[in-house]
Every structure is written in structure tokens, then in C-alpha cells.
Length: 179
Image (cartoon, rainbow, N blue to C red; front, side, top):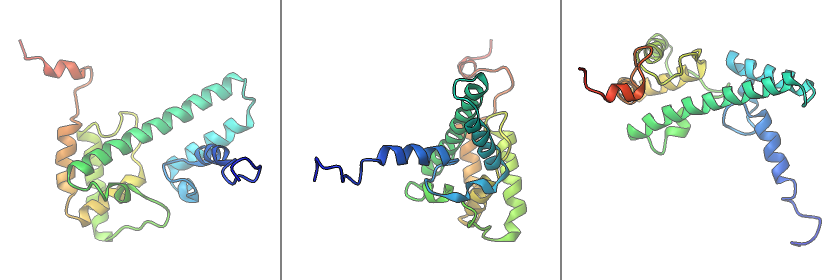
């Protein structure tokens, strides 16, 4: 059986590559990714890129933009996961960050507070890159943190781990004492 052509795992690599191509966030086989605006932007970029000739300059530029956007998303998710784990949610971090079209806001009264905290996170910390547009995805995550009574602690931890630096100040400059 190991040498026959009936190996059920023969196309495994191709399946993974195909899944990664359609995987806009982090969960393979999840068709819910094109629900949010930022998901649609990435999806549209992938569609346009796939219609172009692979040797063209436009294809290379779009491919780079897609890669950059995906890496930025992974970095932001990693930052959130790091803080959640530091707060004691080691086993729950992935499920807290998992958002699909089936996700719901736990309490509609928390929506305003969740928006305020998310906005405060974007303005007062570097948990999101400077050019990042706030994602609805993290509104659901903040709502979950409010339900767990951990949203304020999350903000405090984000402020410590990813403090906002004045424009032009580098990370190594903050280590130097004022003269």
C-alpha cells in the first residue's frame, strides 16, 4: 500500500496550497471570510491577481500586496494572542480570536463599550499598525472580553506591551535617558 498509486495523501500538498490561497484569515475551509469589508478587499485582490499573467509586473505587485496584508493580519492576531495568553487565556486564546459569520455579539448593550475600547486600543497603543483600518473582527473579540470581564485588563496589558510612541521615536530611543 505504501508504494501503490492509491495513496490518499498524494494530493495533500496541493490541497494545502489551494486552502492557503482561499484562506483569508486563519481557518482553512471557512467560507465565511468574505463577509467583512476587509475580507472582501483581500478577496477581490486575489481574484484580480489570478486573472493576470504571472510574469506581469501587475501580478507581482498584487501578489506582494496580498502577502503584505496577510502578514499584517497575522502579526496583529499574534499580538492579540500574546496579550490574551499573558492574561491567563492560554487555552482559550484561539477560540476567543476565532470569528466567523456565525459569531454574534453576546450583549447588544456591550456594543458601544466594545467600540470605545477598540477605538481606544487603536489610538493609545500600537497593537494595530499605523495604517490599519479597524476590523469588525476585533469588535467581536472585545465583546467577548467584556463578557469575561477582562476588557479593561486587556487594554492595560496592550498599553504596556505595545505602547504608543510619538511619531519619529524609535524603539531603541525609548531606552535612552534624557540628557
